[in-house]
Image (cartoon, rainbow, N blue to C red; front, side, top):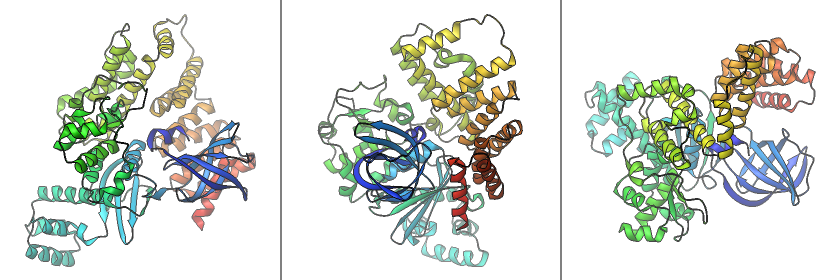
Length: 565
């Protein structure tokens, strides 16, 4: 599957047969694995498919009926292995996808839209902005704000009735009505709404059947209150709240499995407040002790201990140790994870983030990690975990500024890139040679632009999108006559959801090379996402005139036709 999918949505192993429809003809196939974004499959009959081809998927387990696009192929002795990316909104059934994995994947993908979960007559919606859950709504009476406040003794029945009457007379929301009547203070309303939204999300983990769909789109800001909700916290609390745990617990590993702390700082240092059971279990996870022994040592009720372990596994803070695998990847302790994340951001913290964001690229890999060029592998590892914890986006979850959160993301990505390079002997040698060798002569703007472009391609291949975007932008600035530089700058801007800037960049590429079908096709898809179907149609038609077999343009026309119907 494509790299973006691997980095965000969890992959599930599966072996089930299905017929893949390609150009109206069925081919015997078998799923090897799947995620919310797509599937991996083996084709026994080896049809003449290639990257970019569109296919129809009608699969029973996991249940999915959608169109897909082949993103890679690999010829094996047993047949043709392919990766398929699903086209359209992300959707599935609760029995096939863990809700925790879906929420974590959406957070990692930084998508914006509404996740709708349906189970029978129940409909609940989670509003997500840049991956963060900011609001939720439900069609159940017991999930209404007034009902929750009444049930928890925060208001009286008389006050509830008064607020309903006030709502009818003024058309206001019940929370606003309760404040106007003096039943709640404004600050109490914010806490009450936060609690209501959390309860709506937490209750989803108890659902055993149902389906969900994530509709990627702009949010109706006028209708929602923007809250700061921690995905890890809600996942942990949601699973701990499940009363009928037998069904959810079927995904627990064997009692003989050994638990270890996550070696991925993005997972380890999340914003989470653990209860006593969570702290006790986590303190026993050392990469050596089996689940059954952890439960025995914890002296916690067996059912509660299992639920706690499953909740910790679902957040990704701990994992299953692979037999004969590498040891825990860092000198990190459970105490560091248990330590409460920052709830308030002081001026010193903000200054540190701002200063690091200004300097991290100039510091280079060694400077950003705060180590010498002679640092050992162990020193590099420990420096990375120290810096990653300090600048982890979730450790500063309550940042009010989206810009600051973005800067933390940039810093964290650079620190990870530095560690990945310096911890690999071969990559470290290449980096050192480039860093410490002095150029014999100053490069021309054109030569420097070529160098920036090549570095941008390498960053793009490594999925360092933000870095690639900056490099392509520099290349286009240094040599504005190269259409390819503007095109790739637009591609990376699009991946970062900066659609208007992306369209302008590719439009500049088309001014230089107006007969390039790929450029016209790509800007057409950006116009689609901007809600400009007329301009998208013109671009696709132009691309097909230049290259009648261009699949990317055909795909765009198909999307437009589906929108009309």
